Image (cartoon, rainbow, N blue to C red; front, side, top):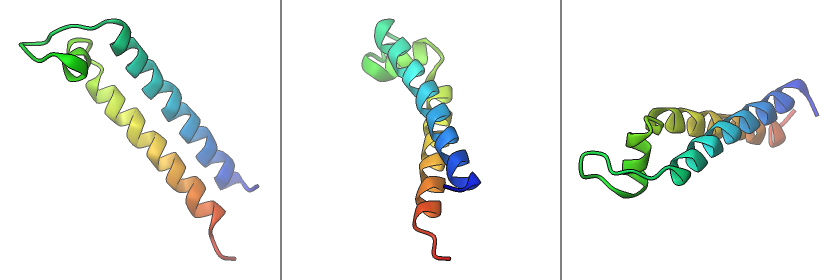
Length: 74
């Protein structure tokens, strides 16, 4: 395993932890935001929609790094 693969795994884990925290916090504290209910209303009410999106994108970038390094031809 090379350094880029380890970096991709670390980025994936960090993104997963932050997105899981945002999701669990939102589920545990439901609210209605300007008539918007459900999961989207809870994300907006807790101001966690943007951090959730960013952490999910970071997790996907980490997965992409791992995929590229795993299947790269030398």
